[in-house]
Amino acid sequence: MYDVDDGGGGTSKGGDSGPPPFNADEFRALLEWEKQVARENEERLLKSNPVLRELKQGVWKFSRSQPNDPRRICTASFLQSNGGVLIMDWVGDAKGTLLAFFGGAIPPTADIRTEMVTLTQSGEIQRVRASHASLPWSAKIGMIIFAVPSTQALLASIEDAQDYSVELHGQEVIHGKWHSGSTARKWLSNCVGKRGK
Image (cartoon, rainbow, N blue to C red):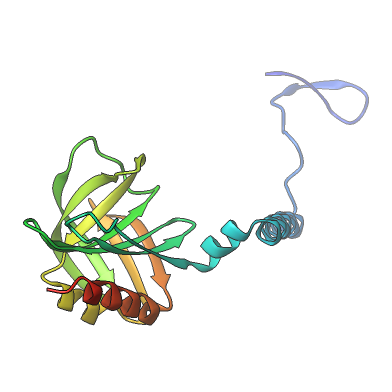
């Protein structure tokens, strides 16, 4: 409690009433202004940075292992600003196929753990076991890995446009939507076909 100006030149005992209440219309206008500034900053960044532009829209990247690698790995990755999707298929003694999601909101782990997660793809919800790990080339980013029964099953499941989300411990850790899935399916099919038997 301290003296505050009573408006009449004197003082009165009492609590500080603080600033006058913020006008609701002024508050809405301030929020709109902040949104506009954020949009303009984003637009300016997107115009000047082609990598950010690609990530904003989502982009597929493709790679295969070196010719002398007996695993003959074929990889398609869909990258967005909040993370991405990794589709991988390989041969050899420990051949396999996987679908993985990675992003900054997925907690990284020091070791690979088996977790029950909820995977939603194009509205279809599945509660399944998956591996929880860190991204091999960035230990600060977590990833959720799903084993796929076969190369054929993987290729058949790639839709041209597909939304997805993953929940870990009841919390959504990544969501997004890929486009141009037919391009990824065609590239993977071609990569797998070139490996031969």
